[in-house]
View 1: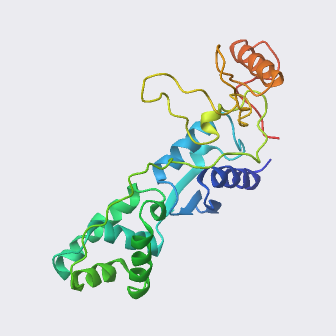
View 2: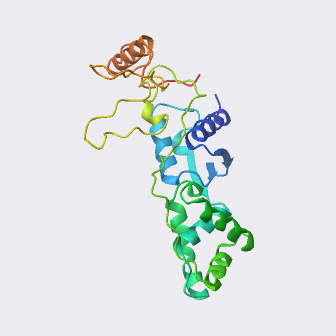
View 3: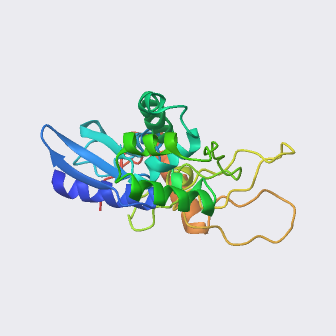
Length: 248
């Protein structure tokens, strides 16, 4: 498998995790990973680094990837509305860097504001023709003054999607790397039962109330495969080199 095929695999896996189109393409001198809005750069880069330990798209190593997230016009307008009306056109120019910083650390911006604020951002981005400084100048002249718009209180997952199309060999990544991370505990301190198979990542069947440990695997086959993978990983003499799977 060549690096071009590795780039296609990275694009597919990261797009499924991010639920936004992720493009991986050669741009001298490196392979660029690009997307618009969606997750923050740090979140997607860190997940890719974790998956790289399981040799996803091994023909194109993670170390050769360079990540770049872009902000849409609406996302920039939402950044301005989150800051509120600048005190003057001069203050608006000074606030451009603050808006850029807000956009950089805010994943999925269109999902973090109510419909009224989103509509206002779409209008502001059109009138300002997508220019961030012009949006700030428009807000500075707005009458009555526009107050800072709050983010929605409901939390969002850093990555809402799940990898489903890529076939992982035995000993592939754990479920929490193939989809949204399951919280470690509930509010009363009791561990939450897993919702996905630890081996293949498929959703676990619904479980009626009963005693005993919650299930970790969706089938006996996955339980056996995970057991075999653990033993192969600790015994280098065993065939298969589990823990270092090859793409297929």
